[in-house]
Image (cartoon, rainbow, N blue to C red; front, top):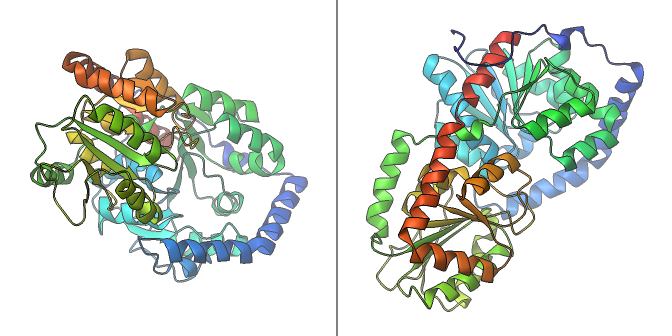
Length: 447
């Protein structure tokens, strides 16, 4: 595979092969493994409870989390670890590029959640293999690495698993962190358990930081260039596939709402739905034909949120069972996987996890459709993205239902202001593309 011709850091020597952890560092990892083993029954119980509550299914998950019933790929290839839905979506551009350049390439993706597994299947179908990431115990991770036998291992964002990293280092398998995220909270935790996490990070070939904050925090932990590189955020490389366009056309027929103001609240958490419903009712007094769409982040909350929507007094339709009618006021999304395509129909988007103190989900999906964004103040998952969008006016911060209602009414009253804000978001998105190329260059030059 040819090296992409992109701007990036110069080629580096492999510091991970030269690294030797101290006896104390290895003792700490052994103690961590023993503690993990002691707590394994608790983790297993939590896994069983989640499986019982999940709406996505989790066949084989319990066995695979123990490193059992893992299927070897047809040939040695790449292993990607993506914790859940957001990481799968972020890594999809990089994985699609690899598959486009080498259709015969073997790719295995591990996730930790059934929703992440469902998104892998939706995005890639049979082009990749999915398994659940085993518990971070030496035996489990050794089984994973031995059976998958990857040429390279790529971990996304903020997933630091000491025994996985150790097994790759011990077998001299190049391991990379792409779209590396090191928030202030993660930095404090890594500093607190420095003897555990710093040796694990030093066993990587290279780390691509997604923003200046993350780059500086990795350096402050004790890592150094050229092992740490600023490769920017691959979320900016989001695109619409032909499958996405086909889904959008299907949804267009289902909606039948082209002449109505449409507000979409995506990836919501409790109590954001209550805030949104209150704000929407205020907006309805000025825009009585407006339509609200609510898409909760987690399927296990579908029943509770749908009940809340019914109790609001609005006329509600479930996406899985009905079409939008002229008198429908609220469309409830009780399916997974097509949120970014629903944004194509929105006039205004609220991106969840931002009032609920979850760090905020990805606001670039509505920006791809030139839709202006509202978010709460919790934005630590994507601070640089949110800053750029806020500074250009494509994103506004709301703290309450009254804040939200004010911006809904302002943007729905002025088509020019709303469309200008949406276009600015699209400009920010286009201006910051290129992280997929930068990360590939980092990987190829350090392999």
